[in-house]
Length: 118
Image 1 (cartoon, rainbow, N blue to C red):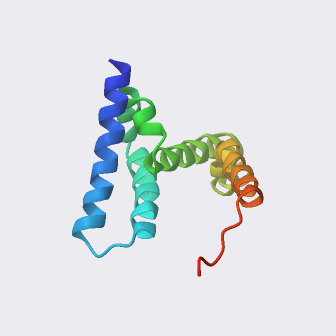
Image 2: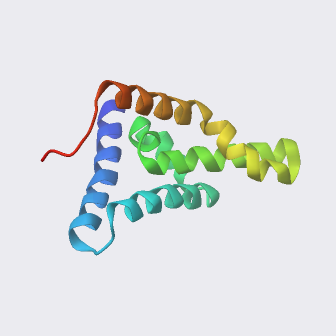
C-alpha cells in the first residue's frame, strides 16, 4: 500500500504541474518555484505533514517536499537558535540534497559537453 500511495501522491503532484504547463501562461520555472513555495506554505499551515504521512516518498521527493524540508529546518533552527535560525535552518536541513545536486551537475558537465548542434 505504501508504494501505491507514493505513486498516487507523486502522480497527482506531477499531473497538477502538467495541467499548469498546458493550460496557463506560466513558465515551467515559475511553476517549479511555486511548488517549492506552496510546500513551505502548506508546511507552515500544518497541512503538508499529513500528506507526507500518507504519500511517503510521493510527497517528499517532488519540489513541494523540498519546500516542506526547508520549512521544517527553519522551524527546528528557530526553536534552538532563535531568529538566526530563519537564515540558517533551511540550508542546514537541505544541505545533503543541495550538495548531491551540485556534485551531480559538475560530474555531468565534465562527462558531457553540450554545444551548438549546427
